[in-house]
Image (tube, rainbow, N blue to C red; front, side, top):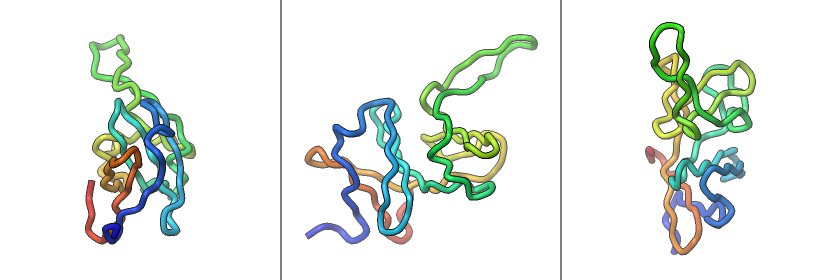
Length: 124
């Protein structure tokens, strides 16, 4: 019998590293991201203005550098909201410029299937 709150959402082979998929789970839009082999699930809602954040650009960002220089890094870890450009760290859910966070859900892979845990109180 499946665990309560645990939903099978996609075959793992549909989420190779560097890919994303948006799924509907129990009435919620959830973005699945394969970040360097780690499956991350986030609610498809930006905490700033409720935009569909998982449709945004997914890449890297500038990192600390000496004055007059720009260094690019964190490739594949940063999700940018499509409405206002807010940047979020997918591995932690943290916003890079604010205290708001993406709502993340625990994931599990078993028998070639990706599962998301939507149980009350479940935290990634």
